[in-house]
Length: 292
Image (cartoon, rainbow, N blue to C red; front, side, top):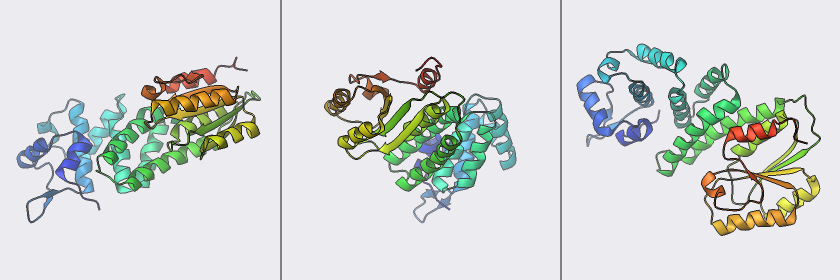
């Protein structure tokens, strides 16, 4: 079982360390282990309790009321509020805990519950993306190690792989989409998402993921002969490098270019193609039956 400092709890829950200390003393919310030097250490269950309390407080409950709830009552209250709210904070918290604890059953339980009411596209935009942002912030601040983020990312990717495999469309466009990443990129969630949407809308998709060199991109274009090219800018990069990449694509191929990713990066360059700043823009554009 992993342990967390009070600073970890603050970063994960948004509740100030000072407030957590007061709650411990006044309400006995949690009882951390203490080192010989009186340093607090919290376990997984205590972290989850603090995350649930944070969710309830953000939904208008008072700590004095929450403190009187048993663990079962606390969980029931969270479930009740979640089912009647447009917020997915409770599910995001579960996925964060899943990542920290390498808990695949928790991931599947939370995901399957969401999928009863929402599409994978909706879950990706409203739950997975916020979760990945929070996990990324914890990783960059040193609060978790890379394998914990990779564990969650791979579980999410498995859902996309399955959705891509079973995707069907009654529409056959006889058009081919070539999906790839620039040489400096590693983040392929946008490619998996676009792969799923394009296949559902009748496109033949060639998704090569990460490419080693610009020359390999051109070789694939020559071999695949696609009707559209799609790539993403996620990682911060010099504007001159981004612009040269766009210019070179434009100059070496007359195929239609499509981009998505970080809006702040995309607005810095002339992509010579169409840019999608939101997922629903991408969905609407490629679901248009008049695209030929």
